[in-house]
View 1: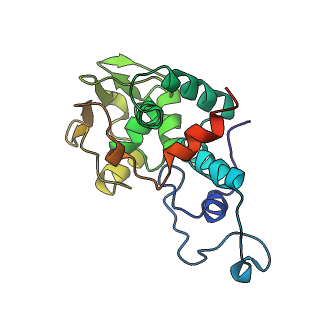
View 2: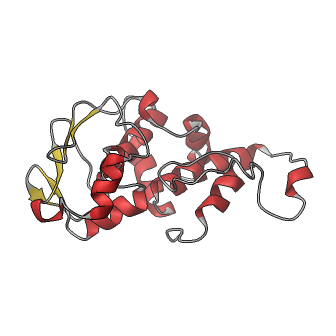
View 3: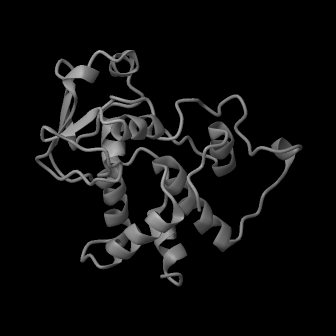
Amino acid sequence: MARYNGPRVRIMRRLGVPLFGLSRKSTQKRPYPPGQGAQNRRYKFSEFKKKLIEKQKLRYNYGIGERHLRRLMSEAKKSHEPTGLVLLRSLEQRLDNVVFRLGIAPTIPAARQLVGHGHILVDGQRVDIPSYRIQPGQEVSVTEKSRKIEAITNCVENPSLRPPAYLSFDPATLTGRMESLPAREDVPIQVDEQLVVEFYAQRL
């Protein structure tokens, strides 16, 4: 499944939750699914639909394809820790997500663009792979030439979310550090990861 490039608020309305990594916009004006008559329609979801929705929340919020999410799930199942927690941790450790959570970019798609264009350093080395997994102790910073980019400075002044506990950030140098592995409470979206695990239980 290809990466989604369509209307972002429409996706959040369909899934029923704000996805901070996908868009800064809110669904408060129309807090119901898209479509004619959706405001007054009553919905009954099957167990499969409930699991699918939880899976789609992760896919759209973190901007990853189905194949990549399956690969992360396969890795998580091999861990001795809870599969759902390991999956969420792997998504939070992605470089594009870390750039977003540090407040350097307004959304994960914007962070992905910064990474892809070579504006981001990891431990002083340029890394242009959005899926690169940051480990505790590693530093993420903006290249010296890119520190004056207006989009970056504006975002640092008005971040979408506060940096989570597992990250520290120095706005003066635009340098962040992963202090520890992400915890469950660090995930900013409303998602039942156990339903995602159950969705893939018979598909891997």
